[in-house]
Image (cartoon, rainbow, N blue to C red; front, top):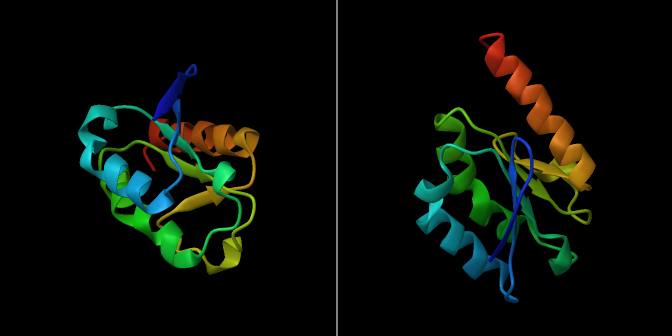
Length: 110
């Protein structure tokens, strides 16, 4: 796992080649990042199935309970098929935009 610290979030990338193992690993270590906004960059995997993406659902729900954002970057998944509990965007810039908007919403009490 590689991390890159930004102003108000961390980008996490996998160094291995198994998206399922990566999702399970992040779920196990979620406590390390519970007070940070997270962008999970899984663009390197290319086309993912919805089932593979749903491996991140438990992590996403747990992170939202901590009042922090979790956004997944993948440009091949059909966003219309993704449940609303998971934010998936095609670019890092869009992930940053979502985090900024959610920070504003939390500051306003939504």
